Amino acid sequence: MEKVKLSYTHHDSVAWITLADGKGNVLDNVMMLEILGCLRDFGKNSNLKLIVFQGEGKHFSFGASVEEHTKELAETMLKTFHKIFKTLIDLSIPTASLISGQCLGGGMELAIMCQVLFADKTAKMGQPEIVLGVFPPPASIILPEKIGLARAEELLLTGRSVDAHEALSLGIVNQVFEDKSALMAGFDFWVNQHIVPKSASSLRYAAKAARIKFNHVMGNFLPQLEYIYNRQLMETHDANEGITAFLAKRQPEWSNS
Image (cartoon, rainbow, N blue to C red; front, side, top):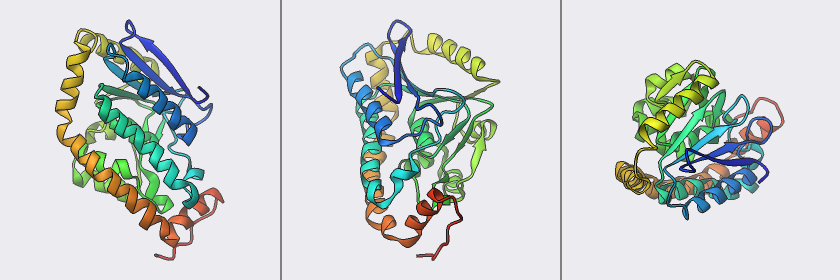
């Protein structure tokens, strides 16, 4: 694998997927396919009790590749990305994300898909897609389900980032630690205390039961948002202008159409 590192801990009951592209851990199509490959293999492993996502280095992820948001590539990118969410739903293995530094766009969507989120004080989380003239399909469903519609809409419509403590107060993350080493130690304690002693089989049923509504909503509405994104949004001038302007490092010139 080129952009993902896979490892196991706690007597092989915890699988770690580390995003590792050497810089901002950008979720391009190559990294997404590698994540999907890991997840498909997990389906054959009845001993797994937890899947953990983390970013190598200072940041969790800068998000999905902006280059792959262009009209020509967006459909393929979204299809691959959304397969990750569908596969996680089908697996029903509990998931956690450990967040340091920037956790933006598609990176935040992957993180908030997890049942448990731990962060350190360097964490900055946000869905800045609207700044580029587009919207985040998974986050448009996940955030309202997890933190309520009013709080979610403000983040989705402004595209602003929140620090670790605001993320905690909003209910996005479960715990905040002083730094990355404290985060790792605190998470290890949590895993040993709350995950390792339990049955892998029963944990999957508990995860499926806790998310019976969430999974239904995701399964029904994500394809609709994918259609709106590809067939309606990407037919507008401003969606294409926003992406083009970002790649050209200039201010977008909106036509409001």
